[in-house]
Length: 90
Image (tube, rainbow, N blue to C red; front, side, top):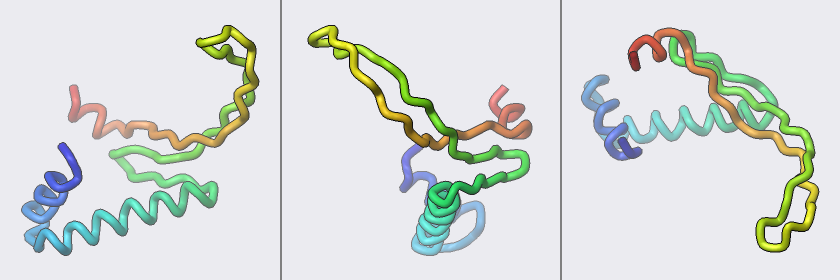
């Protein structure tokens, strides 16, 4: 399912226009992004939790030369599935 298909589903389920559903989806993703960028987590009970995890610096290899390189530490977004979503998929 892509974004436009998701907007159609939201519009149908909520009985609103596609434009309104699109704005709601954009606002939701922007709010989640903003919260993660500021280091907060977003918990949607039953659906899951969005959070930011820190990945430590590590050594890797350049596949072309075999040379050892240092991969910098990074913050990465993560998603932990909630129980209701997990049950719906099984």
